[in-house]
Image (cartoon, rainbow over all chains, first blue to last red; front, side, top):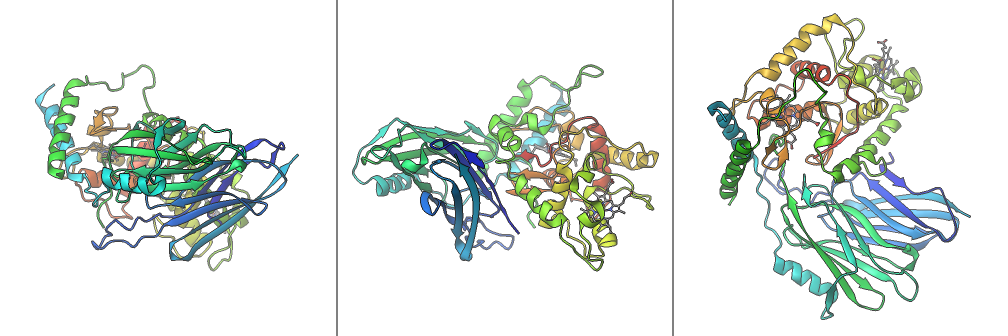
Length: 106
Length: 151
Length: 262
């Protein structure tokens, strides 16, 4: 099941700046909250979110438990060539999600 | 104001008082200062160039939209290489850090954060030349009235 | 500490209920009904209005994936019988309703449950499960912007009347009725929170307090717990009856699903 919503333009003028927005389903459990049984619910967060453009790193975010559940991130990138934007989320309990979208630059 | 309404008001207030959650131990202004020192070292941090966009009054601290924008040409010669956000009262002072470069075109990042209580938020930007700029905002968090049953 | 804060709250609430003149709907004039959307600050309104930022849309997308997935002994997907989801346009606006061959109303969740058990011959999806909420959000999203239009079915009247009785009955340790807050004190602050008029136009909603999508039933349970009443059992018909009353009260207001609420 795809649990990610990515929004970026499908086409862009060369040299223009595009906005990339991404939402992902994730509880971002802080590790500070007691559960129903009174015991602390173990931490389960996304620790890192990175973006590449045709393989080159363009954005790297380190998250903490203070990032809201179902994390939303928006950032910008210069559209210099057509190709693939890759997004990757990694975190506790072996969490890894990778998504790619295409962008045509003319 | 008649007596009945007064009593209803009191009952409503009781409802609020009974559901106030108590949070875990929290970071302190000192912890935040220490976390900031870890990032900037001994370099001076100047106010300016950074703007920190948060709603002044937060209706629920679980999801608070935040945008940090930094003035910068974002060229190879002069760009923002990192943005760090800290808070003073959550259990940990670090909120997030991002690494940026000229490929971003604009030094702007948006996300959503959790705030357990009203507090100060600080954003610090690091330029490619190694300078630090900052902005801070005071946020007021209201607590939800009707919460979940404890199951 | 909490105690001190509690006392402060008490003082603030009393002071404000003293100061604010009673301002409820003017009878027989303009439509003074407001969606909870209008009581939210600009930041949350923007979060709801922008589909690329509304976290409820994650669940709508998930619902879209489930819509095409075969399930149960019948081996059929929702799409096998209903085709494209466009066939669901307007459906959420007229629930709760009485399904064919039955004599009591079900809400949208209950209707999907019927299809799941009778038509797909699959196990029930638990109330509040991510799958059921996602399907509900996917169906309800098709009615976004459409006016709430309860069906003209005279058989619904007694159920709706019972819902109205529930709305007006004082209950719980705080001895408050829904109407005490949502009719008599809507628009006032309850320790910083604006009391909404309680229109069910956004469901399922992404509630920040829950940090996830949730149903109207869950929202109603929260208010029952808030007044320290025992919430009705999960499968009690009372929820559907309250929903019938609330949808009638919101007749004509636009649906917003998936709405965002604090």
